[in-house]
Image 1 (cartoon, helix red, strand yellow):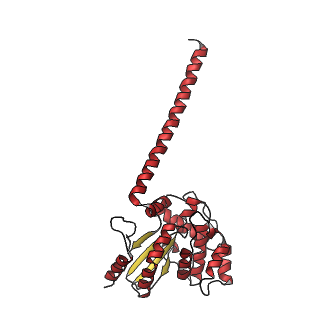
Image 2 (cartoon, rainbow, N blue to C red):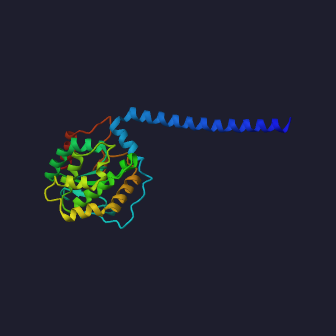
Image 3 (tube, one colour):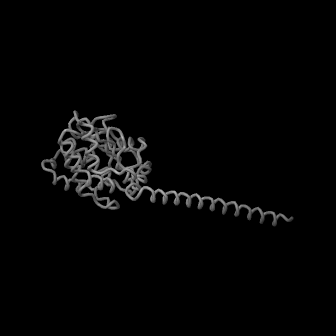
Length: 258
C-alpha cells in the first residue's frame, strides 16, 4: 500500500472518530432533554421552576466586602430574618427569591394566613433570601432586591416591604429590580421606610455580601428550589400528592399550639 493510501485511510479514520464523538455528545444532550421533560411532567410548572433554580447560580461571583448582617438577623451566620414572637410554638422557615414567580405565587396565596398566625402569636417565620433567578436568567435584580429587603429590616420595616416587593414583582425576564431607583420607588409604598438612611443602604449595597453568603447557604443546603417552606423543620410545600393549602397550614399550626 502506498504512503498516500495509508495517509488517506488514517485521515478517514480520524474523521470517523471525530464524528463518533460528535454523535455521543448529541446523544448525551438528547438524554438530558428527555430527563428534563420527564421532570416537567411529574412536578408541574411551579415545581420545575424550583428544581431548575436549585441548580442555577452556582457560577455567580461572590460579592467582595465585609459581611454585614441586617439588624436582628439570627440563626447560623445570622442569615435568617425573624418575624413574629420568639415564644411562638411553631416556626415556618421560608427560602425565597424576590424574582422567583413561584415564590410570588406562594406569597399571594399564603400571605394572609401567615400574617394571621403571626399576629396571634402562634407562628414565627424565619426568612432566608436566595438569588438563584439572577443565575438562571442573568441580571442582578435578585441581589438588589434582597439587599433592599435587608435594609428594610434595619429600619424595622421588613415585612411590609417584603410584601410590597412580591406584590409588585416584574416578569421573570424583566430585571426591573436591578435598578435601585425602582426599589426606592416601591419603598415609598411603606410608611416611614424611605429615609436617607434607607436610601444610602440600598444605593451602597450595604448587605450585598450578606446576601451572597445567604445564597451560598441555600446552594449548600440541598434544597430543591424556591420557595422552600419548612414547618418546624419539615418540608411541607411542593408535595404534589399531598399539596399544602392555607387551611391546612392553619390547621397544622393550630394543632401544634394546643
